[in-house]
Length: 58
Ligand code: FES
Image (cartoon, rainbow, N blue to C red; front, side):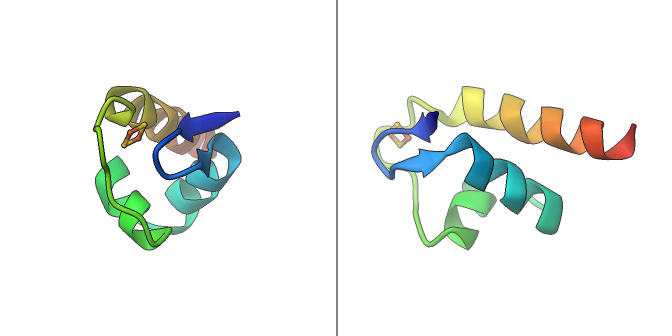
């Protein structure tokens, strides 16, 4: 499933970046070689990042 349509960022790729790197969704997009375009996805992307990091701590 895509989290960001503009950059074709898949949820699994964002989750992987969240496990390996610090920072918010925008910083993780940069790690993936992208930057937000329309920015419509950022709230949902932040939720994915928070969920992944919470799961990692559990
Ligand atoms: S859907 Fe992510 S920047 Fe547009």
